[in-house]
Image (cartoon, rainbow, N blue to C red; front, side):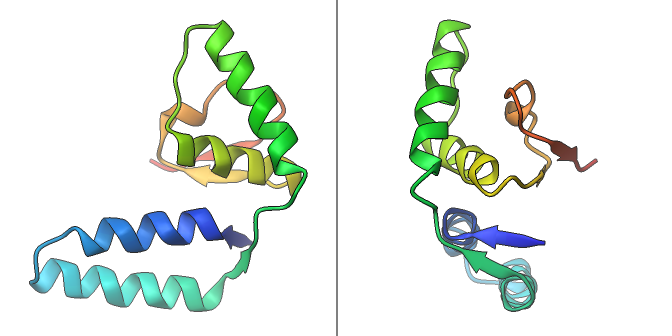
Length: 102
């Protein structure tokens, strides 16, 4: 199991937006433990090809996807990896194995 630089940024950004307090402190601790355990992959060059294909396919179907989510999906496709997420927006991306968290 790996993560990527975009996911790392999303996690740290989300926590950084929270007000100081117990919840933020707990999430910071959990995030740093998570990020220390999983290898962080850079976005491979090939991800750009997948990014373009996924974005075009979704636009043709009238579906939007956040830019960072597009890059996360493209990175998973380029690494031939399953994507683990609670975000249902990743459903229906051709060729992307998705493990949905409850």
